[in-house]
Amino acid sequence: MSKARVERRLAAILAADVAGYSRLMGADEVGTLAALKAHRRAIVDPAIDAHKGRIVKTTGDGMLVEFASAVDAVTCAMAMQSKMTERNINAAQKITFRIGINVGEVIVDEGDIFGDGVNVAARVENECEPGGVCLSGNAFEQVRGKTSFAFEDLGERSLKNIDRPVRLYTIRTAAYSAEATAKSRVRASAPLPLPDKPSIAVLPFQNMSGDPEQEYFADGIVEDIITALSRFKSVFVIARNSSFTYKGRAVDVKQIGRELGVRYVLEGSVRKAANRVRITGQLVDTATGAHLWAERFDGGLSDIFDLQDQVTESVVGAIAPAVEKAEIERAKRKPTESLDAYTVYLRGLAKLFSFSTRQANDEALRLFKNATELDPVFSAAYGRAASCYALAKTNGWFSDTPDEIAEVTRLTQRAVELGKDDALALGASGWTLAFVVRDLEEGAALIDRALVLNSNLAEAWHFGGWAKLWLGEPEPAIERFARALRLSPLDPLATGMR
Image (tube, rainbow, N blue to C red; front, side, top):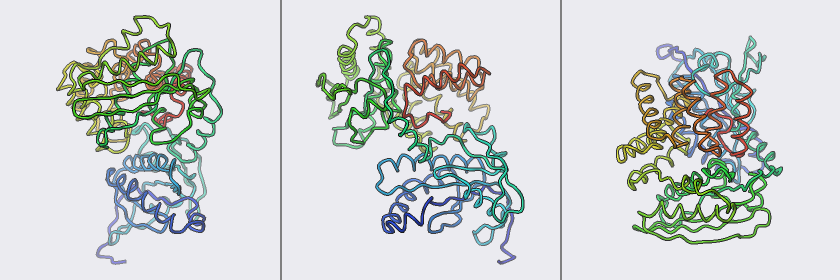
């Protein structure tokens, strides 16, 4: 080691390796190496770069990464595990990481790092469950109260070649881990009881435009149909986050009915060409697999809201014909009169729901603000823009400066002023006020208003659970979390604070 080039510094060290690597290599050496490289290229390296990490070195099955911030290290680890879980669902060769994080002094020599800080990180990683993230006590102290992840104290452990016990913590948001995801799938395989009213899940529609760039438009159409259906108090509607877990997958509708606990499934496609739009839909009974109806809805791009209304009314007419006129009119509420604003808003939703990187969240925020410039009374766009700041705080991307807090407050106030009957705007604003601005009373009240307007809004039940918990009301919090889980039983964010 060259004395002239040695330096010492405090760092957050992330150690990761592939669980069961030797077994995987023994079974399929070529396939395992190819899968690992693909994961690195698509998920791991971009996440490290997005969270300002530096890859110090890699081994056959693992890597050592240095961060200047413990928050960056933890949020990077969780982003990696989240995307790995999603990628593994349909992968032929599944790769699962274990990740350990420590904060300590390291010795730097020609780009490599050594010392006790590195050794502890490696030993913490050894204690981690496949798909999980573990922290040393030192790392935990640096991130406590600075992220929204829930931690579980594992107590002190004696680690190999470490001369003192080390307290370990694991992040309880284990829905990010492959193991927990598998367990949730097993639990979901037991049929959920059907609600006492007509129940439906709207699956992602197929993009028939021949242009992958139009995927956001097809997804946005489904988002709005789900929103419109959810306004019918006489219908039970599964949330978008659970419906979209089936995107790109060939799954029998009977299985979907069992996993989501619904009687009906709406499938369809969207074709957008020039200024024309065609929406096709087919309603399926999950108990029998029978098609109740199939229809095609054609119109100009400027008729998009009317086409969505036609789809919604056809569905409700088939599964719950005795609905009140007031419910039908409420479901027809247009989000905006500006088609340009609506298109930009849908692009923002696509970025927001990727839950991927800081850059994606920043782009979603930019698009939502652009939508409000195109339509200054677009309440949902203000609410979604505010929620981008909440997501940023969740991932440690929010600096809590007075200017940022002022901007968050402005957006939420505008959303509430314009969206007095917009459950989505009220729920998102209430969550952001409670979580980011820490105005718990006002935030909780707005979420309550949202739930009165739309009792099918899973994210509002979820937000309301955290608000009640922070207000010291654990029993109502548990009830709200349970309601959120029933409305979105396969939600990948169900155990995270989003």
